[in-house]
Image 1 (cartoon, one colour):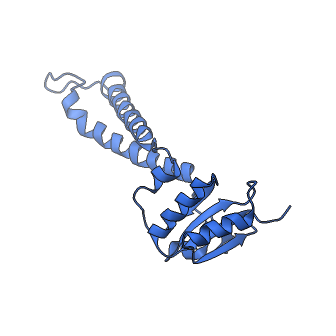
Image 2: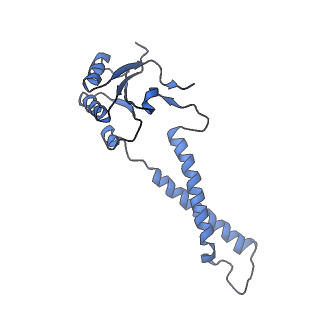
Length: 178
């Protein structure tokens, strides 16, 4: 068994890369990932990537912030330090809406940053890892898992037929900047 983990097809044009994805999928070859220097519309649907549920997490963090603000204000104004000012009620909701809004936004913002880092495994201090260093500059790279039971020459030929400028065999999982 070889040490090759990924076969990388490097394209100079996004349309050629999309054609390469179609050719690989027609031959039932699974694509590990695609690396592009810019967003490409429709690539998620073509690769079968599901819609992100990060908006649900944002809503949950926002509701948590609203509830925390309400609980803190209620505890401070009604239970712990009740102050009678001109006969007003201890808990006048309109007075506290700005505070509740601010805590909703604060919890949502911090929660979304943590959720993003957790879902993408991009925690601060981690070295960036990419398959091909030119994928962030001017190349469009398709990474195919070489451990699939498909001949490497077949994948190589399909990628070159689709217009790949270069086909490389990656022996390690990632190339690091370090």
